Length: 256
Image 1 (cartoon, rainbow, N blue to C red):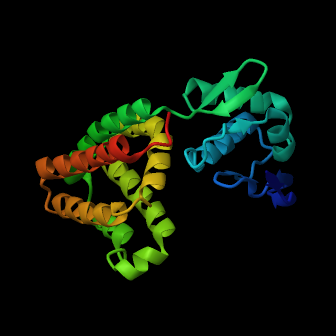
Image 2: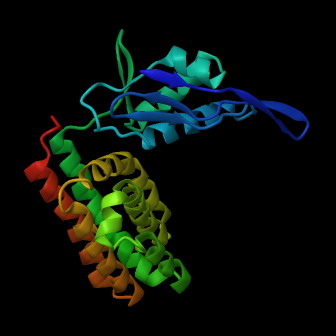
């Protein structure tokens, strides 16, 4: 594994702030990136947010290898002491994103196949209700924004060359539906599941036929939300997630 980092300083008001630019832990199949952290009064929160964002963006299931978070390296690379890093890891452990193994350190949590299926089942209910609420609460302009997330994806030749771009658009599409519900409790609950939903969706979208099926489903979902058909929108979104569960059950063999 290779750490890439280029520290720099910037002027913020009357203070000189030390930034840690994009840092990546690169291996064959996973990527760990940390956004800049400033030496501000809210340092603890900044470190926590930086680590959480990095974990959320990781390809958790891209490799069978354990994803270790080295406290000493993280502290050094962020330019902070180990105390705020340790506290951030403890918070992330409470949220279920990190687990600490005695005498081995902290690791990003990887769920088993059975656990992933449970996550998808719960997500199906959450996002389905979010879609129902979106038909009631979202404005026409907000709903129109969903179209932008699938625009240009219907061409098969483009899809073959841009599967990674579509994968990211796919993730943003599902985030947008939850956001359009304008229900803070739904959003908070979804956030706790999102890291694993994002990871498994990113991995399975590349499986044969999954991207095209996803695009078709998204179009139908948008049409239902645009027409303010709450029951249909909820059912389509729920079924979309449950088809992911069926695919994982039948085809995914890289989870324990």
